[in-house]
Image 1 (cartoon, rainbow, N blue to C red):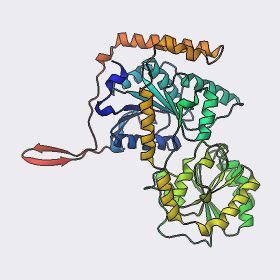
Image 2 (image 1 turned 90 degrees about the vertical axis):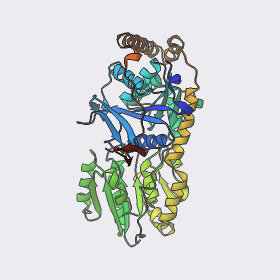
Image 3 (image 1 turned 60 degrees about the vertical axis):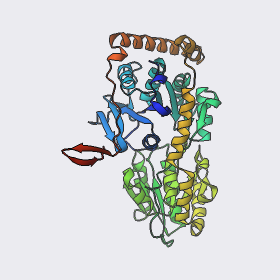
Length: 457
């Protein structure tokens, strides 16, 4: 049965979200998948998430709203990524696609091994696939060259692609060779119901600058080492709160001791996502020092809490907020110090509640879901092609790489056919559909009992 024929009535989609990055890990990609899935389910679509096992978390779990998650028994190998197997994941991905009657596969993040393998197998089996790129990558270093070639292979036969900013779109098109007309720009959003300003406006007698970030090189932790002491020297009423952990934390600790500013720089360590809002509302300014960023959800969360943002002018950051609620600087210590000084002068003009309301209108996960729904509709309208028709796309990826990619896809196709002979599709048990959040009235022992099933992690 063709995947399109499995669609439920009223044209609703049955989507498999795939990424190595998901709960209980927290980050931009993880939040994007979770909130997008929740909103798509509210629109009437069925959404299943597939990721690798996290510690003892393996098997099938249900999250809020009945979101079903397959934690496949693959352990992370490097930076929460699974070890590339090429064909090792084919049997389990095929089983999930058939059991859940999936019509479309949506992969997230270029650095996710599981995402690349799922998209490859899905195309082999004739499913439409959509890919979302959440990051920016370079073109010169060895790691980027390798990743760009992998991305070129994955996107050679992708139905549609999504990027979170126009800068990210340009980067993805250049890296993958994907036609620009098949790449859509849909920004991230923020849960404004969760990120609200403090009930009482903070006094400006002491200015608190909040930093919440992974303390790694890419997030500009080395810039903070130079910026913080200079800001403390110029502004005696400024205090810093730093939330986050990482290999660069040691440098920040050494900086505090060297300049004797332990009382003005609080190091909180890793902050659970549920507590980020409580940290943000204690500050006046949010500082982002990233060296590369496709979008940066952290800026939206801070703005939703009413904080004026100071950020490096990199990647898609200039597209995120209006100019009057963000101060941009070059990723240079002196320029960042000047930007912070400018932000301190602008603080009296900032109304946190008004800023929150603006963000609420600008960014909504429901809007993101509706725009993503349009991309799904376009993907399902793409014509089906046989393996012979698809191979020239892989062959165009390079003189040697193209031949290698064709060989990979031919072997994948043969393995899929062998799996079909060994276990035909009709022998795979299909999961029945049921709503875990809708109230259900049952008559039992002469009494009407209203039941609401709600599965939570």
